Length: 337
Image (tube, rainbow, N blue to C red; front, side):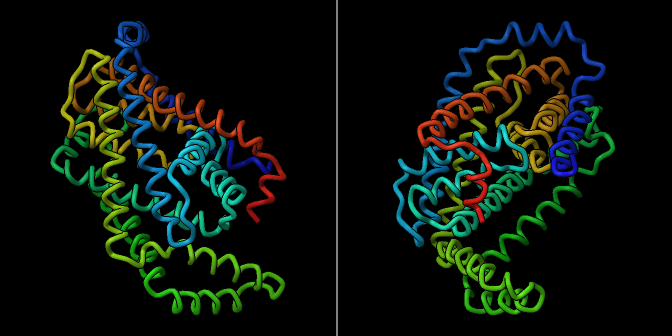
């Protein structure tokens, strides 16, 4: 039980958000919105989403380039496996899973892969916050509307804090990449000072491989390319939101969907059950209600969009994982060490 407290903590958080999302809901209106939706609109939405996943695979190939050139067609299946892992395993285990599989296939160290994956997530966070800032004038609607979730939350302040965290992390990684020798020297001092002697050599090796994974950030052009592709990825995901919206009887602007995309995905950083159940529905519903969409229609859209985001990539990732002939077991976990 102690071993799984993080899982139960996440489930508890999800339960709270699900209560916020579904409490006081007119179930008849909700089922009406879901049943009358035109699900043909999901097909182009899913297609656009997979294009975005392919670009994610190219971005990862690009970040790993200084370590080893791996074709995007090789990275795409591993990227989908990572999504599948994040959707069904706790604590974003999919990130580790794809690093382990890449090690098996291409003999790239897990530490170097994880460095590039963390860089990906930092850039994603920066872009999400950029989406929010572009629509800064719209944030007042979330604070003033009776959305059931944001009424007492200062979204502007949270956004500023989030910006500080992500931009600060990005600066740290950029400095570590540009000054690897100084970073290694500082890291060595910390390791020797605070870790037992028996762990020093292994930890130093992990640190050096991690720094290898940051090599792509030493070039300003590479940094701009990673940022540019990150913007394209999240714009394409917003296009999916736009397609799915057409399945329902409401309409908001594309900029409103960008704001929704930014806030909803930043909310997935909150600890929750695998697949971000609850946090996604509650936040998506709250944003749309703030724009005047009915609660039933907003929640119906949130549920259908979540399934459209979760199911296709999870199924494809499971197929690719099956082809690799591996499963998330103790022997696979051992490869991360």
